[in-house]
Image 1 (cartoon, rainbow, N blue to C red):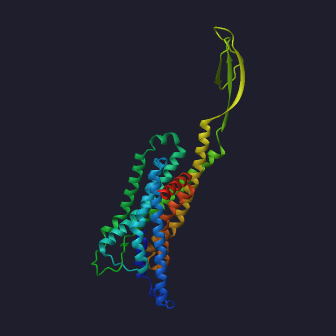
Image 2: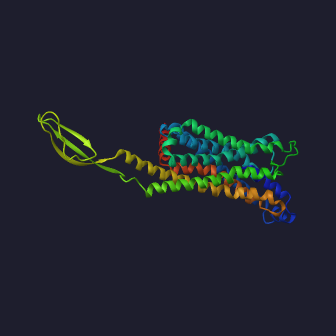
Image 3: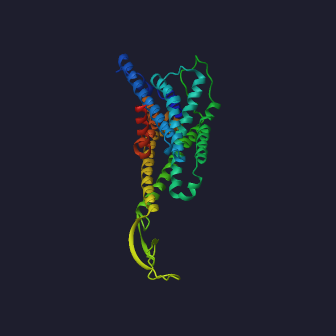
Length: 377
């Protein structure tokens, strides 16, 4: 996400000369070593970008080719994969060039497009995690009612809200940007003189979604835990009674009744004789509930891993991006460290599809089928 990253670089321009001189003149680095480090960095970031493209493309392909995965919940996962794919295509390649050279040579128009795409797509990726958690929360805590409105249309509405919020966060900087000619441009920065926008964008893109995710996941965890600790009284198997009814003509009829009858009168015909046989039958409804509970536990675990990865990847970036513009000259951070924070955030777009393919059994099986299909074709 470029907004705070570029503002940090802008703050570096106004940092004390002593601090800049301490880091900007690497006396121990000769030109050959610096060039080798740049090449190694380009290779590493290119591998991350390519892996992000392929992993999210595989998730989308798997969902598209597997009919079993055509569910409203997986529509949200597919939309997340599409968003992360856009990050890897529209944002990360240009960011590689800018990170390694710290010079912008693509002009004002591409700068505006890149910054807007960066902020929009990264924010949308984060907000997708919120709607996926919200969908899971409703599915667990209000299963009967939510199942009625858990449709593809409902998922599409949630996705629309995500993109609308993301655009609202990315558009404002375009209104107060300072247009420059191609010759005057050496960097691609967002003007962060508006502190109110910095607070608005960081809270809308990270802090509020993080609080929402933590609350939702906490409630999901407690609901899943209560299901495990307090199962139904007749959990798994239920006993019933089979009555073997024998008539005078030698015919017999087997009827099932959940309660035992001590006596029975037959109004017409010859008397009937009952043999009570207690048999053990599997309760299919409770069996399905047990399977469903196991799936919910796995889904909750997957969601927890996604939440943890999200916090680890984005927290350093957004802490720095909020603090630096506010404290101005009193704060300073090494440009290389902030570049690391930026790419750690981008790395979240690679981690999301890996988590789904590794920890979601349905996705893993479908993914393996797609891979086998491609090998045989």
